[in-house]
Length: 574
Image 1 (cartoon, rainbow, N blue to C red):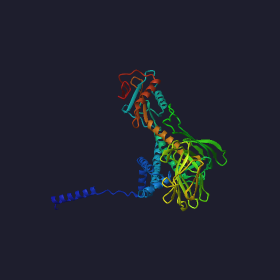
Image 2 (image 1 turned 180 degrees about the horizontal axis):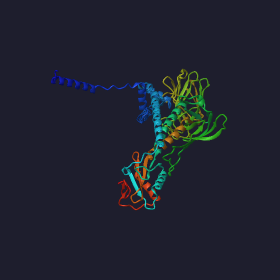
Image 3 (image 1 turned 90 degrees about the horizontal axis):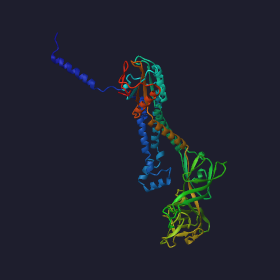
Image 4 (image 1 turned 180 degrees about the vertical axis):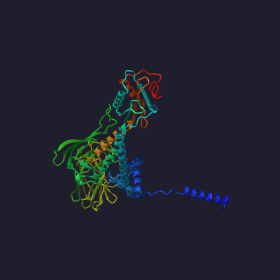
């Protein structure tokens, strides 16, 4: 029989090596993940603590645009004006809901994902902690001296037997709030040991913090859905009833219903302003002269249709609670009573005009619109000066915030005010581009200057304007948020849980009781902390002091030996 040649053997070996190399470099066949596996992987990623922290940071970043651009829920006119002043960028930002940040789809998506992530983190974590609390402390290490903190106490001849010392050591640990398990004698310890653990409230505080965070998110969501906020200006002698049509501005929640408006009413009887009137020893006005000190609104309120009217006060930072809503005093000013008559002598406008203070002496802007005037609509804009003084060159300024010398300085216009076209207008703005100027400093007729009780006739017999008297007004902010109490409660519990998790430490302790060769009782103990614990040494010293209080401790010896252990004279870790 012919034997294979060396060349054939080398070829066969090369072929085998090539086959083995291809097998080694071939990609392993991985099983398909599948839909269920993909969903399980996505849920694991979403419910991780890392994802929750990232979503929390992302939520904080997403709220930044709400402080950069005006929001419709706060001031719809400011949003409209911003868009008009920025015709290129404004519509783009509006498309991405930058003026409705907190109700936008992208902010709501982050909010919802954070909510789900937190719940997914809390439930398994709480279940695991519950199992740990019910489980026994870890078994006693064989070499306690290797633990971070270690100590030993040798009792003299008057000391208790090992079995009794074991029970007394367990009582010491219980008094120090350890959860204790006494373990009977086994092959390695002559009398037995103790396993103890404390600090479970640390994780409980951590869980409470995360549960409270979820509670805050839920209450904020409830408030966004069912809350409402509105503003109302009330003139002295007038009132307000909590009805939707009575609000000047109203911002409802997503799921708001008019049925949520509980009946209550408030009437402004009088308004008092307190200003600084201190003078220097030379009799001159002090440096703070005229600064506002306090505002007090004397009001009559009635809570509910069957409630009894009650006189009370409304002050800044001292809101009234009525019908579950809070009423805040947020502004005040003067409302001069003006009557406008048209060319035929008919009253086209009559009543108090809300002015807007622009400075500390209540120099106030005002606008009057009389669309019912005939033959042409009339409009007025100008200033109300509480204490008018001549500033020269035909100019006047207000020298004091109180109405010592009130005057109206107005410009008059005639024409189409645009109120009949159905387009909403700002009541504090008069569009004068398409109006005819009747009175102004730039025309021969001059501007209008009126004191209380005076009447001015308009040019061309178009009518008259009369300044009758000055009244006060207040601006109140009415807010209802069913989630605000829950937010407060959960914020407090979150703070308590956070403090608990920061200041408590998870500690484990073991005690072994043995007999020495001389027949005395030796108690050895060791301590271990989960995580860094700079007070573990203090705990070691405290346990030793407690042991020395209940047992007669023998003086330190040069060396203590048992069948299997040795300690240093001090009993500390050697």
